[in-house]
Image 1: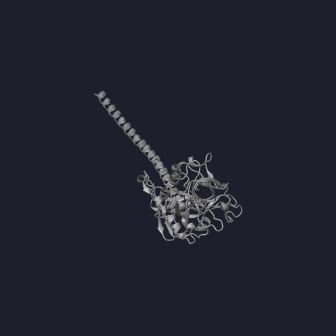
Image 2: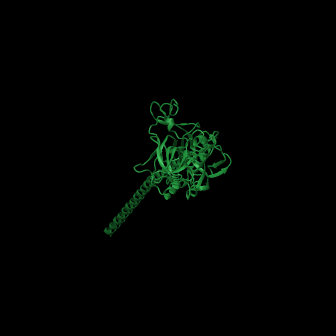
Image 3: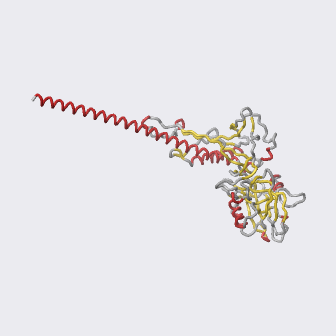
Length: 421
């Protein structure tokens, strides 16, 4: 009996120790699981935060590009322009672009007040360090800085997985982007997926004394052109009545007529285009395959170019040109036209690039075409800029181009838009 009792006591003790071990193992397993879950949560929060940061950076970059694009507006061609209205439009549209993006599943929010997240100014080079810095100003701004901030102070932090555990309200995420426009344009280069937005029309730059033809110099630069039409940049519609920007009336060559009386010519940039290819150039601009052989870019700062012109603007061309009404495109100016014997065909010497939009297309007798074109201001990624940067403002506020003549390179109609920070 004594032996059996001792065995029973030992058995119970062994069972208690086994239960205790199992309890310790269960507790250890639970602690290990909590550590693993916590580690996974921390890792997920880090990935979530990194993703939110990337989303916010993309949003402010898109907003900066839109704001920069609107710094180069047609207002720059008006004698009396409302700079504050232009900046306010740029601010509002940049904010709208940002809100179309999301951060952590919610629309990106920007402070659109004048002292908020979108600021305008210029890049200034520090004389001592050579560093380019942003200086806020509304005097001819060429840069826009957009800050994105989702934070607890704004009551819009990024929610985290561990919020409910830690009691935090969320995490702060910020991003900054700067976009600038630059009009030291010396040429153009097609990019992958981005043809040069050129309309292959050459307009008479300046007529000789006594010349009755309208020219870009006289009608546009000297502002002698009629102002009978307008263009609403918000709606993209041509309107009747003046808008503060003069127009030029162009006449193409006609059959059995003197081609030298024309003041606009459709030209072939590579010298071997078919009629169908010319129609594509009018619709889409120039891709890499459209430039002259062995050229990857078209520069206008080193020499003028001689191009073959088409036999007037007739057939399907007026109809295709009507499709471009209201679209701002790169145009060209010519100084010299030499007929080659066929009606309307010849050679022109292209010397300068400008920008403008077709407002009206009318077919006239003898297969001629009358165009009304208004100058415009546009941005394009395909623009090539001058190699030196000495015309960036310095600490001493050196006038652009005053010392090195780079003012001659500036183009009042065409700007390159790019992210600068």
